[in-house]
Image (tube, rainbow, N blue to C red; front, side, top):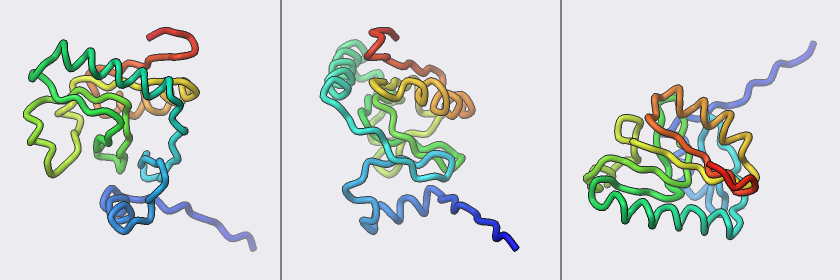
Length: 145
């Protein structure tokens, strides 16, 4: 008789316990739909692109927004993705005890060097499902937005 196997789905609380316990140290991961997913390695052009974008946005928006780079956001379906840039509502102290949630978020930006299909597929669906107001993908290889 064949045995059926079930993949364990993790909650945000489980994920945070793993982080606190050090289980995920030295790993670049994010929680997507209850799955702990490895993130692509970050090449210098990727980091340079989102850092330049963050600096331009900070100058343009001033204190009208809080800008996070490569930081988690919390979505209610056991997802805690890490967009490259998150533009959220101030004040920054709102995020002292929690990550931004959909109602806090004005705009997310992903920088795609090798992850364009994932960013425009799974990630776009995830953000749309949670009514993220604006989501852009900077496509490095194609040099387009």
